[in-house]
Amino acid sequence: MSLPLEGLAAIVTGAGRGLGRAEALELARLGAAVVVNDHGRSGRDGSGEASAGPAEQVAAEIRSAGGTAIAHAGDVSDFAQARELVESAIDAFGKLDVLVNNAGILRDRMVFSMTEDEWDSVVRVHLKGHFNTTRFAAAHWRARSKAAGGPVYGRIVNTSSEAFLAGSAGQPNYAAAKGGIVGLTTSTAHALAKYGVTANVICPRARTRMTEDVFAGLGHPEEGLDPLAPEHVAPLVGYLASPAAGRVNGQLLVAHGGMVAVVERPRIRAKFDSKQEAFTYEELDAALTPHYAERPVEETFAAVEVLGLRRE
Image (tube, rainbow, N blue to C red; front, side, top):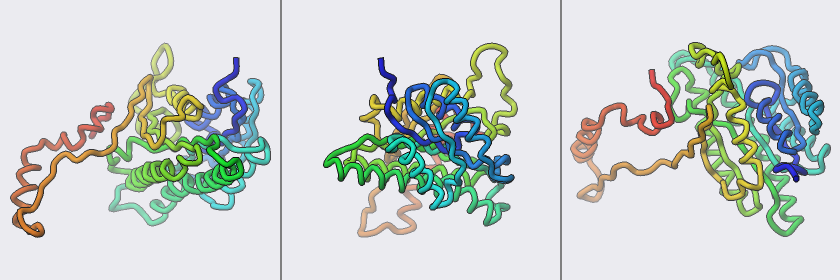
């Protein structure tokens, strides 16, 4: 019996640790040949010397389990290095079928204290990093589709965050970048559908180096799998990368601890029409002020609370 991803070639960025590592291992377990990408810096803020060590270690782990993997230590936020990453998969495996974007850093600070570099660096690694790899993977699939005269196989799985949904107060750079990734994903899904390519985005909740502060007060269970283990998220990535998910496109899914939630696109909650050619201040005041006065503040976050988030 063949494996779901047998014969497919995948890239996973930020795969030297945490979620990316779990996702790379899962794709390999399902039969994919994997390029394990990680820039290898030791600090979760992107500090430290770049190192091929983390990527090499995970690639070796895949090979020791009988899978196929190579390591790549390039920086996905660099346009040229992202192109090199995509080309490395094509050179090694003859094609690219699956792109999982996971690489990221944190530089948390309140918006009134944040420096320009703290903003730029996080947006660069998360949002530009997702764009860079997507751009070259998309060009590869478009060229293959034109040569084949029809659709080809392509899957993109991007990584957003519940910080984008909830508006994490101390992470304006991170929340903005993760929101941008959702927009990038839906745009990509529309653009590449005719070539046979799907693009989806996940909001994972997992205990990793990136979230050690967030989940510091939640201890590990004495028995069984940690509800915050990255291994709860990796199977969803494997599914979205598979032929079984061919009809799943442009979707946002939240995953953690044995739960997957499909997030609905925003809907209009209330609508007001001017009784004249254009609204005046007075008319808007009369329509909108009572509307918001009658709604508890908590209702603004209703969709977030459904997903089990707690606001401080």
